[in-house]
Image 1 (cartoon, helix red, strand yellow):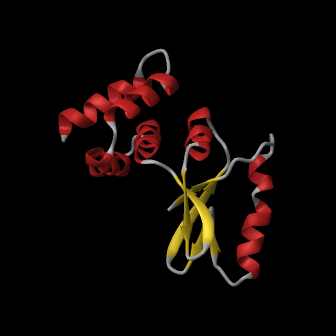
Image 2: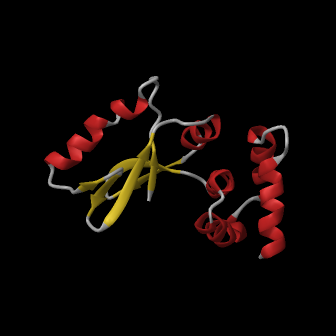
Image 3: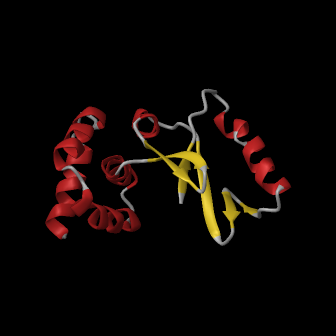
Length: 130
């Protein structure tokens, strides 16, 4: 599970240390960049791009066991997976596509894609291979 945190600082990674300390003090294991909540490795990312920031800002507000939280929408998850584009990301995209609003996804790819249209190119590659 990935957690995106909006941290406004040039030294964002150092700013995340109190979060890791908080979980360690409560008995959770940490290993490298992961915090383990039960057996689930959690990785916390600082705000590393405008797309990540938009994903957090536009996330759906839900309550999990009485705790208010935000869940990133399917279209943002697909766009973020197109950025990293590892084999696991391609698999994730294929799994998420049936749940996606393709019009919204294409708008995100237009907004956050670069000059060479890399996100659209990768998206087409996934569609061709699925």
